[in-house]
Amino acid sequence: MSRLAGKTAIVTGSTRGIGRGIAERFGREGANVVVSGTNAALCEEVAASIRKEGGSAIGIACNIADLDQINHLYDKTLETYGEINIVVNNAGIAIFKPFVEVEPETVRKIWDVNLFGTFFSGQRAAKEMIRQGKGGKIINMSSISEEVGTAHLTQYAMTKGGIKIMTKCMALELAEHGINVNAIGAGVIDTDISMEEFAKPGMREETVKRIPWGRMGAPEDLAGTAVFLAHEDSDYITGTTVYVDGGLLAM
Ligand SMILES: NC(=O)C1=CN([C@@H]2O[C@H](COP(=O)(O)OP(=O)(O)OC[C@H]3O[C@@H](n4cnc5c(N)ncnc54)[C@H](O)[C@@H]3O)[C@@H](O)[C@H]2O)C=CC1
Ligand SMILES: C[C@H](O)[C@@H]1OC(=O)[C@H](O)[C@@H]1O
Figure (spheres, rainbow, N blue to C red):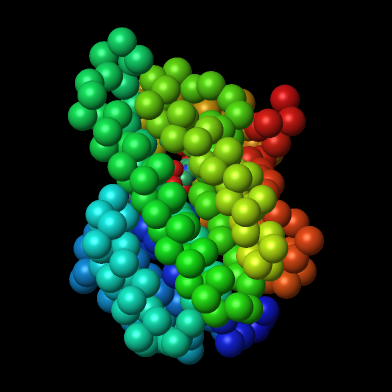
């Protein structure tokens, strides 16, 4: 369990949910892990839990919708670990609302986090990896929503469709630098992002019935895919989305 030994990885939005699961697994795989999110105390709490398990981790607060804070995240990472080898652009939000009721500020808020954040964190990652001249791994957190529609999630799904094409374009430009850019297309994962939705009577049961695997996913179900895409075993894979969805897209 040291597939990422000697590597430094930033995982955005890793104070809970999928990002935390990936950060903790990266720590067990020997990486220097940068835990990031909007709450500094939570970043440090998760980093401390990784260190308690024998891993190497620090917490750096960053609102991914703010370019100055993205740059501080990268500057502080380089100051601490000297280089950046892996970036998981995981931070993201979802707001459930019928299409005809969505206000401009909702759209801007989701786009700022999911699209602007992924884009400019990815851009800074690429700049540092090109400068370092040692290649690198950029993993964008997408979704089955990049492929299939979901009612009341137009404003969210369009960000994941954007991340799909962003991943392809970044991969084309960065291949010559040995930088892999791929996405993880998560299915329905049991985290806070959908907490309100699944609190509605019968919603959780109805959702699970749709999933061929018979259960919702957990953050741990994605961590192994993140390790694979962060490891040299995936060096010849770039510009694609690996779906981790319990068979949802197979239907
Ligand atoms: N849970 C699911 O069913 C699925 C989730 N995803 C994606 O996975 C990613 C993680 O989501 P979950 O772990 O499920 O949700 P979550 O709500 O548990 O975690 C989201 C993380 O992003 C962070 N975050 C939110 N806004 C931020 C900002 N402005 N700056 C920095 N960090 C911010 C939160 O602090 C949290 O750590 C998101 O990109 C989401 O779109 C994709 C497909 C399915
Ligand atoms: C927010 C959704 O419930 C969640 O996020 C996604 O991308 C998938 O569509 C899941 O349903």
